[in-house]
Image 1 (cartoon, one colour):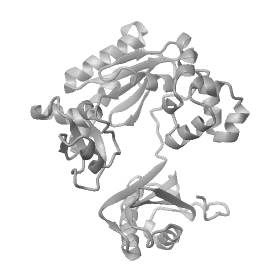
Image 2 (cartoon, rainbow, N blue to C red; image 1 turned 180 degrees about the horizontal axis):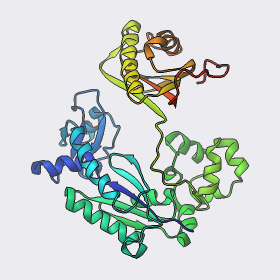
Image 3 (cartoon, one colour; image 1 turned 90 degrees about the vertical axis):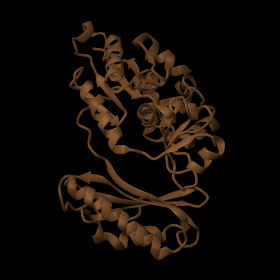
Image 4 (cartoon, one colour; image 1 turned 180 degrees about the vertical axis):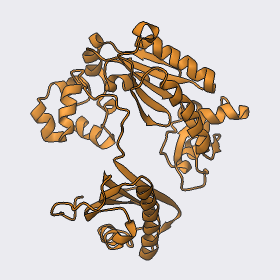
Length: 357
């Protein structure tokens, strides 16, 4: 049976909430994030700001330079979470299979729903209407027969859009799709694809699966299937946490190694608290270092035992930091994360090869 998948994505969510709650911000370029003179980054921005090239994760100083008339607003995450709760409660009225991706987007599998005579398109319209009535905000919806195409569709006609990709259209649609729009294709992979002459789905379709795997690893299997409109990933409401991380950006670049270690240990304590709260243990430890020139590296290792208490692995954190240029180059951001999470404590990892990355 062909599935009926809806992807709902709120439009410029954080910024739209701020414009809703403050009428003086409406129709203005709004940037949610740090101050324009800070080392922070843009968390979200309104469509008015996007027209000037502002986008999320951009340094606030850069955003101010290209859009100096923008209004900078500090995030109010407690408000965003409350609005998100309203939206996700509404989703549950349409399907038991709801997979949240973030505060402002989710997949719904409505294959077996009898609402609106089983029409996914009519259900998507109704969800959009209900969201507007409940929150005075707009959402865009994508409807298709798999997750990949539903997510792509929701971004086709923003804001307040509704786009449908039918099974008959799927393969031809992906053939015309630029590779940069593919799930899992970031700037580095996109540049690699362009260098290999791969610019659209049709170009990828001309390669064998073995060729794609040779150049792109496991993702090659996914690319081979998706250019044929095939994506069997289920909508799952049982998402498992894959990693926990914390990071901080400094107001002034750090050059002192001991201070960096102090910061990493403080971040590690926060990660440790999250692990203990969720009753999880971690098998892999990673640190992230971003230098003053915005280049960054990550360093990881497998822990000898699945750990929950990060303070017991201070030596490993130091070893990872020693494998960077910390202390020799100014550092603007430090982060620490754990992955390979397990609900069972104390499990031995097999013959750990300490350095993974």
